[in-house]
Structure formats: structure tokens, C-alpha cells
Length: 195
Image 1 (cartoon, rainbow, N blue to C red):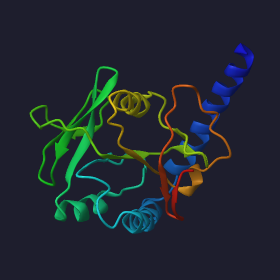
Image 2 (tube, helix red, strand yellow; image 1 turned 120 degrees about the vertical axis):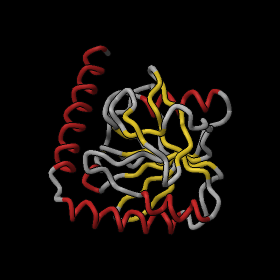
Image 3 (cartoon, rainbow, N blue to C red; image 1 turned 135 degrees about the vertical axis):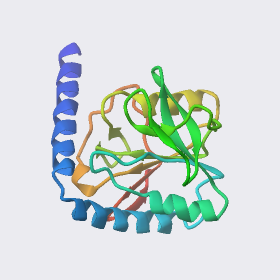
């Protein structure tokens, strides 16, 4: 069993590296083009916000940029939030278009410490790699998985919406026991509710 687990972990590391490289080598205009299609699909799947409080990610490393959808939902009264690394977990702080962002513990732009914390009803989660069952590979820190598990334990699990480009679609991400599946997958090719 230990050998199988090691093979699975090695496959995950290789898959993550391969998918990250494919995304990071996309030209900026191609990232923008794919992000625009993806945002259209996100807004088709959720013409109304998927909750009163929606957490999203600040795009980096050529991740899909869906901030336009957040702006649309803000006009409908949604409270938007960004994740902030606190120790080994995430908290979600309110974000507005005029919010000052500072690097968090991992160097990711995040709202200041005085921004209110919220529990999101829906969480947009970036996908480096993903499979049809809704399992994903992030950057390997497990922050989103731990956050989803903690909120599930408190009976407050948000709707998990995976956001990624098709180049990250794989047959199997070799999910581990701690991995949390997405409820929806949205790419530049369309949107799917995970069975």
C-alpha cells in the first residue's frame, strides 16, 4: 500500500508540474481570451450570484481571471471575499473594488487585516489540474481542501466551484483521502455540475 501511495503522489507531482507549465507558458492575450470565455460560462451557470457571500481568488501565474463576474455580482448585492493565509488555514476577508491589497503569508494579494471576515456561501477555487469527478490539484499546500473540510465539519460547506482552463483536464488526479471534490467545474469550454 505504501508503494501505491508513493506512486500516486509522484503522479500528482508530475501532473501538477505539467499542467502548471502548460498554463504558465500561455501568452497573455491567450489567457485573457480563455478567461473571457470562462467568465461567460460562469455567468451562464450562475446568472444570479451563487450565494450572498462569494469568495474568489486573485489570479496569478496565468490563472483564469474571473474578476469581471465578481463585479457583475457585486452590482446584485453580493459580498465578495478573498482568501487570506493564516497559519495553515484560510480565512476569507471582504473585498471591494477599492480595497487595498497586501501580500499575505504566501505573497498572494489579500485584503488588510482590518477587513471583516466572512464565511462564504460559494467559493471559486483555481484548478491547476482537475478530473471529471471534481477532484483538483492546486499548488500542493492543501489550503482550500482544509478550508472546505473545516467548513463541512461545521455544517457550513460552501458551494465549491472549480475554475480552470481545459489544458488542466486530466483523466485522474489520484485523489488522496484529504482531497475535497468540487461541486461545479467551469472552463473556457463550458460548465458542469459534478455528479
